[in-house]
Length: 606
Image (cartoon, rainbow, N blue to C red):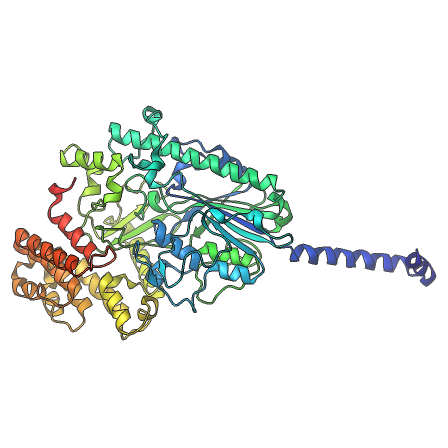
């Protein structure tokens, strides 16, 4: 009343009324801007985009995720960088590529410089958030307990433990669709049946066998169980009156569990669902005009941690990679997505790198002498895998089905928009020459930018870092210790598979750098009988002090000189020695021996 009286007395009633309205509007805007969202990040395991009905799956029905997409935004071009769980979770927790930290090798837990690379929950807690994680860590990083950055982890974590007026960031992981759901002896597979088998639509590279259909049926049911759990979580959010203040992010951790999905850089292994639901109060952050729409921006998993920190106004560490794709701090869309694959558990040593744009996928195989389907005990527990392999050994696979178990070419190029299953390799097509050269160049730039540690074998790089008191992350950033450009050039010469390069390989076999000697041994092995005249150099390398040079030189001896029986005895002796010395470790050179043994004795596999 007094204020209205002043207005009248002043004669400026209209002016002050307008002024106060503007002031109130500004205050409301400031309050709205200061209200930060809760973040609920739901992850599921081992299911690619092609297994959700909202992404067109003919096999699994996922009504809860379909509904979430109707209420939110579905990203059509989201890709994992690492294709397997632990390396993916390494890049998720750090916001730094696993191939940049040296954690791309499965179950390795190499240390990183934690003072330089904090975890994203550290930053969000500093910004005043409660950070909880339920059911999954598996970060593949040493030097710090996985549970350390969280207020709660495993079964203890729940967003309902947050304090009033304190925003939360909660990670909820769902395990139902994990690969173990296809292992008949595992608890995860209980209750899954063959009831869907007859109606399953198989991928073109899988043979139509009863065991394959059975695995499809069980996996579709596992995905549906996962979807049901998503629905329960979203319902709990509603019941706690938190839906209108919470941004919900859903994605899987990589591609599907069936063979040739998880662990491989094809769409089946890296194309992942990403659905984000953003409440009305944060509509300024909507990535499209209205909920229910799709977003075709190219998003990599490396972008997620940085984007979450931006949305919550937390400080972004200098070492963090990726691009912010949502909110006020949105950054330009990348032109390319970078992906990588290293050792996948015991006995499946590999090195594959890939780069894609929105149309084409380029894959480079650094170990083309090995098939995609290297024997991996965990993968062979799936009935579909063992049945497929038996079908191949019986000579009953089509050429497409057989390809999984046969040596690869170095370069692969796929039109992934028109060839979703990546089965028509266009790398040798003259019409694609300019494109493949562009993608090769981009891949090299990505490897240089990330200091790709994969150009020397795993034990060698670990020993080199330890010898200088460094982490792998630090070691590969010192050119005198890790001359990456030289390694890239030399490996390219090896992978040319050209016998005219034999003199260079022979010279490289005498190089002071064991990494070059290792690649020379790889070159001899790749040339096979064409390297027969280098028998003395190969024999010399088999007596090497560097264990991985020795192991690869023995493989070259078998391939070029036909001395398989002798080589297998040497491998057995090395394994026995390692066992006696207590050095058996799947993340060491042992896996390389297992891998090469399997290549030399394919008929002995289960």
